[in-house]
Amino acid sequence: VALLPLAEGARITLLHVLPEGLTPRAQERAEGDARKALQAEAEALARELPGSVTIHHAVRMGAAAAEIVQHAGAVAADLVVMGRAGGAALRDLFFGSTAERVLRQARLPVLVVRLRPRAPYRRPALALALDDAARDAVITLLRVVPPPRPAVSVLHACDAPYQELVYSSLPEEEIEACREERERKAHEELAHALAAALAEAKVPLDDAPAWKTRVRHGSPRALIEKAVKKADADLLALGTHGRSGVPHAFLGTVAGDVLRAVACDVLVVPPREAASQGT
Image 1 (cartoon, rainbow, N blue to C red):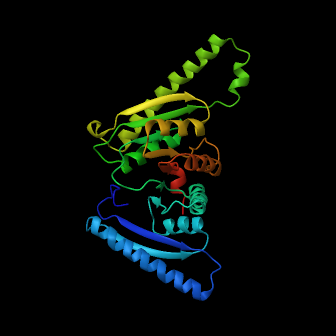
Image 2 (image 1 turned 90 degrees about the horizontal axis):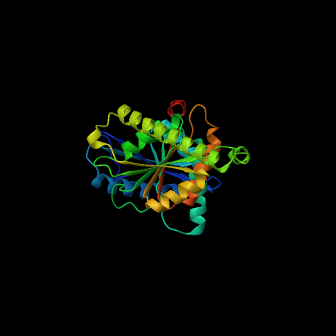
Image 3 (image 1 turned 180 degrees about the horizontal axis):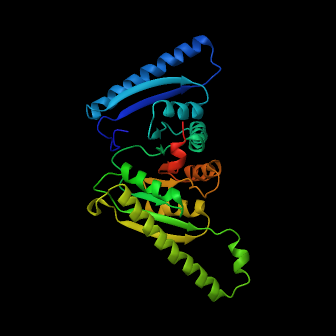
């Protein structure tokens, strides 16, 4: 959190969720331990952050994902940051399932921290669909990665349903021509989406990153994983869906697949209309 470009007067809330089913004595002890740990973390953060930033902490009890989403709404958060400590398989499995549930339920950007924070992001990647979510994903990435901004690897996956059935009756040269035309249109739409996001975010050209755009044919899940590895990305940003997209819960599973597949931090951004309807 200390490495994020926080706004003047930002408010940070540290949240820990205890599981249900504890005995009264165990609950009292666990809550006390959690509050002590959160207080220590708050004091450590305060030493690293500007004086205008306020830090609060809270302990809740219940289903972790539901409590995280509900509390984020209660404090009017504009970003949820989830992190983990340790590398035990059981802990990783629990963290993954909780993070995936938050991705499905949240109506605000969620940053899942996988790497140990050492410096601001220097190798960001951006996976974009050509819908309303693209603009919001780009704008949120620009807010998380402040100037001087590094180059951003941008990927769009052309994954037309049933294209193999359609192409099977065409000569090879026509298939290639169709793919080239789709790639050309995708590059044009990507350029438009990136330019529109820069304009809306009021980012001067001098502060804009260099976009390294690529359009590939295939499954988004596989292509995103491959692109992240090739770029050695330390952050992957992706949107869920726009007004014409498929249900948010389904896209949450795609984001969940990506979350399990990549080793870098993941920033998942819902479309603005979903965020405005959130808790």
